[in-house]
Image (cartoon, rainbow, N blue to C red; front, top):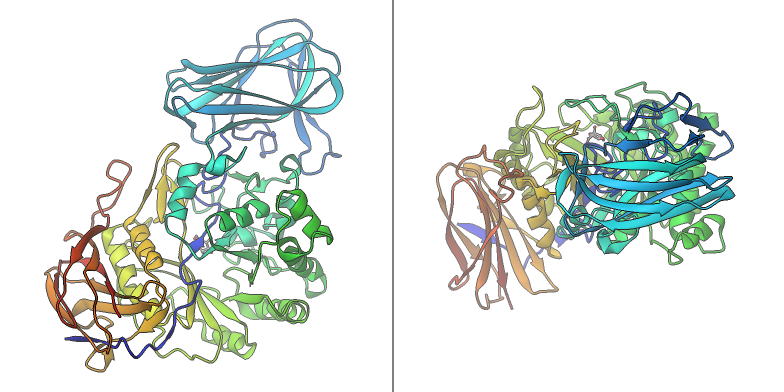
Length: 629
Ligand code: AHR
């Protein structure tokens, strides 16, 4: 018998317990949630014509890349020189093709200037067989300065791998830039916005926070390619593109064309967080590049710029609209503050260099912004254990929150269900900032199997039981594109038109949707249930809905009978809702073909008295919700 000590709550669950880790890895942003369909729209990739091909044999000198160093962040444009009216155009291949849908509207837009009239544009959307499935004409006006042109059209077919032809008709000279194609049907119908299905699957998790922008891209391969938030806000055409740190590196599918255009920049990350009811949790570079790469560090006497970035970010998020950065936020469309409360300094940084830099950040941030909680990196130990020296230092420094990462095999997650049971309650809180069970680690890429997810479910009982000290948790990475990933497993997989959640997605979603407010001890004798007979359990009470919520993992190949005795003066009122994720075969996965092979099954159950007595299937994770009074 298991005792559920409902009248003896051991603490409060953190109000921002279950969240999302977002990084532009695996085509998560460009080529993913950022709905732009044109690759290398501003000719700023290393090779300016990457993603583009000429449509006809044309005289030399017809196309010329112009580099105008005066144009902040977007120096290159393309000049088309057509002294006579011959046929010419360009084709863009999209990121991995362009996913387009029958009946949906698409907006083609560009920046251009032509001193004298002459050139008109015709665009054609093609399917995989090169048949035209949408077309539009766009006359260009004359003028000495850059102007915007746009036109919309409808696709007559669904195609997962479309392409875009841009024909330059007539004769004359024109310069073009920011050649862009977006679906009109975006998340909240925002022009040039985000892919609706990808945001929806996040919103469905009801995440408490969004951590952004990563991950290793925060650090960059070197400091020159670190993530600098200031270069990701303001007019999109001025945002300074950089090579993605995941470009070819660690790549199982080479991605030499992986750049960060920052169409999804910090403003958009804040907005996304707000849209899905999540707290924004930005992580900033601490003056150190990725220690798995160059490990470059900025000298301490040059750290000011990095610290200023943090101070200015707080102003951008929360500042009055009369402050310079608050004003920019308002100009971008959001006069109200974004209500930033937490800020990460460094991602997977360690060593004395990290501590020195963190200490300077901490001193200044605490002086100027005591209201902001600082999340410190705990580095990452190859065995998934804490770096003792670092842990000690961070505790001595009294940082608010320590960000721990674990990519470990299922056995590690199973045996770690008690990781935080005796954790010091008086020191920093824990952010399980990146977790994922890797079935094949360290041999190679992992698959998002039910085995991986179930071992996470077991581990998460331990996070929930310690939800007063482990105040945040997020799986990583978030998205993987089936045609362009560098890291696997991932929480959610997509192609150009579809999206599905892995078993791990359903596990974290069940925790998030059934978070509760108070931690209720579940005991076997006087022990927590942390793997005895391969069983794991935790429970919460939800003061808002007045429900007891029990989570139970049966990690056995046989079904088990369990009897949860409710130790309480309260009574169970009415039916319980039982939600089960189960499969006797731990190797099963969800896929584009079978996106819901592992999915929650919900039923109503009438338990009697003050006991939850039930049979739980082999390899299952069950959530039971009972109204109590
Ligand atoms: O999630 C993938 C990577 O794993 C992250 O970028 C990094 O923080 C960690 O090493």
